[in-house]
Image 1: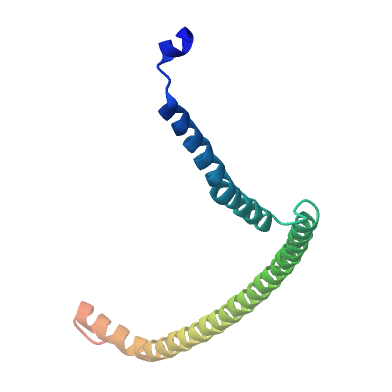
Image 2: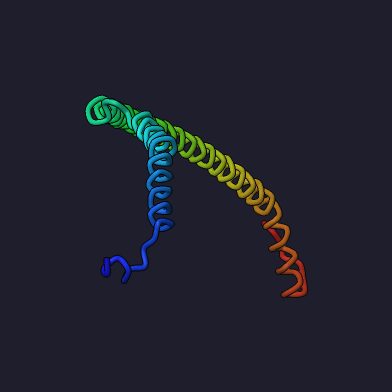
Length: 148
């Protein structure tokens, strides 16, 4: 037994080893196995059963439906925007035409009033011209001019 003496093994080391194995067995049976089983069940519950086909197909269908609806909304909004723009342009043209008509009417009215004022002023001046001319001649010549 010279080899065993070199390791200094005695019965206490053997008891410690047996206690270690017993503790390991007890822990693995009543602690580690239930924890592993619980974690495995949890993993199974968190992962969907048919994750590959059903969920992806549903998502793809919803994305396609959403894209179609979005396309329709964009198309209708483009049409609506075009209609509103056309209506606004038509209203603008109507307002501008009406304003131009009013401006032309106001201009003609003002021109008519100016022509009337000019004619009235000419009549007043033409009535006073002979008197003013006679007065001017009298002042220049220093005497009155005889009219025939």
